[in-house]
Length: 130
Image 1 (cartoon, rainbow, N blue to C red):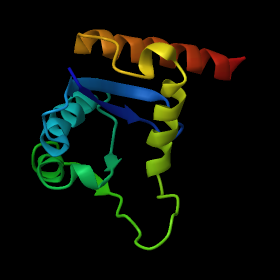
Image 2 (cartoon, rainbow, N blue to C red):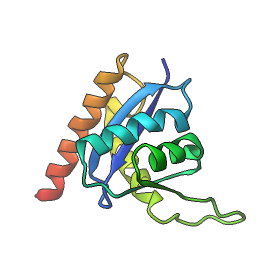
Image 3 (cartoon, rainbow, N blue to C red):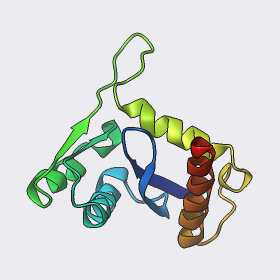
């Protein structure tokens, strides 16, 4: 089963929330569960940033149900540039990709994948402290 990984990170790339689901679900609809879970776990969150895949339902859900803003990073046409704030999530995914069990979809259960991401982030966080 193909899976999609959704993570919520702080401005330093530290993992706040992770959710794995089947790849046949759209990002904009599944993001609602991710945003709600992140707010439940961290009520002090004030806003979110996301890429164009979260446009639509997720933006409406964040503003109406959570009373928060979901800022969408727009793609800049014609040239390659680093999108503000967006690179933080990509960097975190890159860190996670260095772990063999996360380099591909080896896990069958989504909960196992989520836990492997949490374990990898523990190792990354501990390495930053040393």
